[in-house]
Image (tube, rainbow, N blue to C red):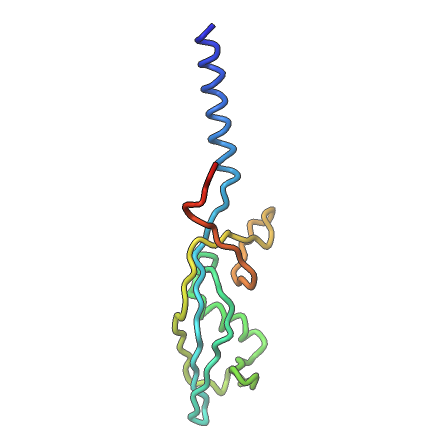
Length: 132
């Protein structure tokens, strides 16, 4: 009789471990960058309102991805909301301002396997508060 109970407990533990691994949220690390760029007239401009991004969700740097994404519209904007055409920009430099750890991963589409890149609203996992 005890062997049957041990067998059932062993199966319950395996199911619990599998369920626990499915339900645990995956976490990512978010980075925030500020852009500095120089235009053809010699002025240096800054853009500090870039969103927090997941660097593992893209195959290049977040700064490169941002420039490619905004370059699709043919301009980059500074903090004063002035838009500068890409053809008038001489160089662009990105500086990492902030890093946030243990943020719950977000998805645009799980069925298409598309992870979120830019995060506007995010929730951090609280480590050490697990009373399970």
